[in-house]
Length: 290
Image 1 (cartoon, rainbow, N blue to C red):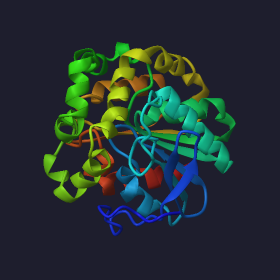
Image 2: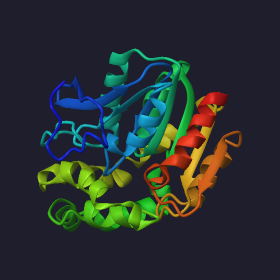
Image 3: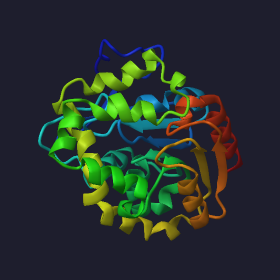
Image 4: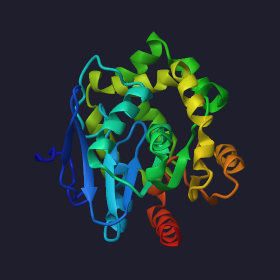
């Protein structure tokens, strides 16, 4: 355990820092509460800060764990390593094995869906239930909203815009909010601060490129979806997400017709940021029933 960075509001994010040592660097994570484990897995361009509302609310009854993928949040950001989702999934699996968890409920968002379920499919006997918020799992080339942006930006100009102009943090992240007022200056600075140099933004660009380069990996995970058929599933969706909108939610529900499904009107890509009380209530009720 080490001290937190000066820019971190420890009243807003009051979790002692913990680190898991990997060959490539240290992976930061939080581990709060006791009870059945809830494992929160973030996507891009965020980190475990996005889960703070849920962790604070649920850690009185459950053990809440949330890593920062290498290159994100409070984790190390080594240059020149593999930042594709396959590599994140490998590192996530190593961290999970070190914890020796069972009876797990996954809470997955964005790239956290495939990264978390890559481990889940290999250890399905340890999975109790799955909660998905604005994510996907299938071949990304088949998702026009994903592949279209990647084809436009996965090139030297896109790298310049991502790493030098900070395109994802300055343009894409704010645009993904349904209500832009919910991205307050205090919240926004916690997402900007970990990516304060061009080199620190390389992991975000790598995930963008993976929407083309790793499409078969995503597709192979989708082929294994039947393993989740007997697991309780909750789908909580911001219906104003410009990328993973209602069509994506319907795709999930068509594949898992037994899943409990809730759409949050007016919320964007991060419903748990824009409507934390509603999302917490839905998750708490689901956990109590399952």
